[in-house]
Image 1 (cartoon, helix red, strand yellow):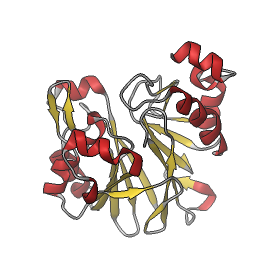
Image 2 (cartoon, helix red, strand yellow):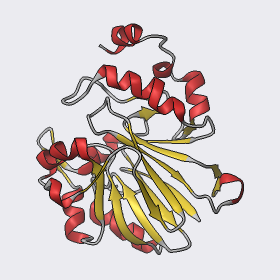
Image 3 (spheres, one colour):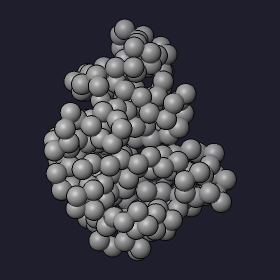
Length: 248
């Protein structure tokens, strides 16, 4: 059975790191309770603590999923601060291979020092299985060239239930937040691609999809695509021209 846990930097891990608390990143545990295997999404800030937390909960960590290359998600230099990330993960959990989109691989190598050859590289539409749990890679460029979301589902769970929330789930990184979306003014960003991601690529997903964002920026820690389509201002701009005026 699929389990998703949402861990907040500065509260659930990296409690002694004021910068982590300020950045309010979410790290996710995606696990299968049948096989007791798990993956971490965007392990950063306190990798030793995260790996220990996975073990305390009784799971074997078999991999990590990277939503995009920014240091607060995969580690590396952040404004002169060295952030723990996937390079540390390779040292403390060598069996946990990092999965990333191929278009972000050179950027990941640049910011973390982890060579692309050491990553498991993917394209949109690829899938991973964690026991019966299906993880689909959804390429959502705009915030970065290789930004991706993970569409997670478990066909063995009756009525599409994941614990107390409705499946499928979209672990969205910095592509889509509750009541917002990722920036498009950073190196590698593309405002036009972000517009297409929000209005076309994500528009194909069911409205019941549960949104798990990469930061705790909204009024609630999770949402649904139906709610975001109705209320998120980033999803309500009617044309590319209007989007460009607002987002630059």
